[in-house]
Length: 439
Image (tube, rainbow, N blue to C red; front, side, top):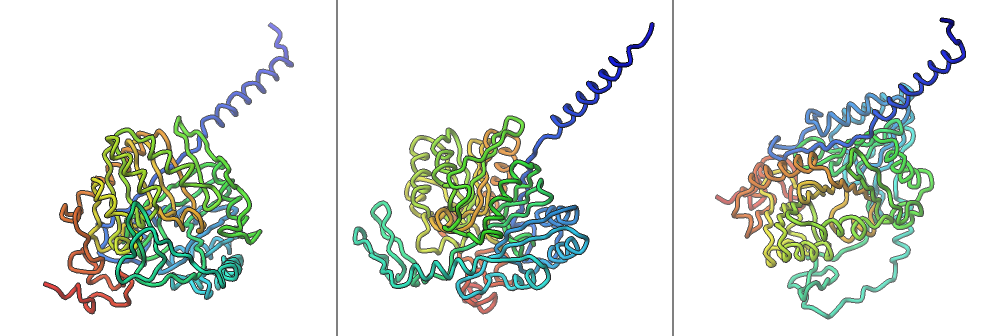
């Protein structure tokens, strides 16, 4: 039989296309959750030896073309800094953004080393200056609808008939570039609640990170990054991705992405999930001061959903915290008693829907700061992972802290009296703290 060469060539081409297309279909986008328990370390660490850090270090070291990062700051994580420096030296284009206060300072002490050692690093300082000019001369009109708490000077907030206010007057010192994300080679994204610090990825705090392999989502992170880095727009001056619906289906799991303040993460993302909860809501959160979220949690409890919250001990001292409001309405709230902080900004709903990101559940997080929030819908596997992690944290906190709040730097709070850091931000450390001297 004589072979038809033309048909043979067509068969080879069709076979090649079949295997090429099949290969593409198998290269699915993925998302992985990395959690860090506060019970694993007795204090802050400058070493990169826990997964929440090693995953980032390996990602930076594997970069071939580009690394873009937006982080709150840097402290005590020289391995990450050196990896970025080495990446730039081997030809990777490295660009970075950090936060600065109105005074031009950074919260984390080593942040200046980033700009001193990398070529392309910028910050939000100019936008903060313009915002301060906007606020200058404006008078805060205090509501008289509720009674001001005693010994408070901050703006009065009325919620459900009760007054909330901070002890100290609040003075504008800049909105916050509060992201903690890295984009590598236009494909991989590392993002979440962990700061690049000895307490963050050093492993002392409870944190969660999403490790994403998705060119689709990485592209939107790049758009967000470049409107800050290239256009110089931060906070409320951002013009791109306003009300933009960003979502992708990964193995029957819908992943949605929201950037703050322009993306309406609370209104379009968090509140609908809470309102649709049927059985359980488990929240792991640093600050919880948001009125609408607090009310939605109570509404969920009243319709029969089992709601539990773990809150940070330092955040519980905030004059606007709503954790006692939740308790008064029948929700179980435990204030953590670890040395490290509950620094997560996460929730797992019905063991299959997940919220993770950099945004605290506050009005500033929603409407002023630069943040990113990811919603993972309908993932029993990741839902079980986060639910079990929540259970371990919940069980590690004594039930006595369902009714009372431990002092964040005291004999009540784990290793806080000998971890060499100021856990309650009062400029007094360890043995000098009166709550550490009580027996």
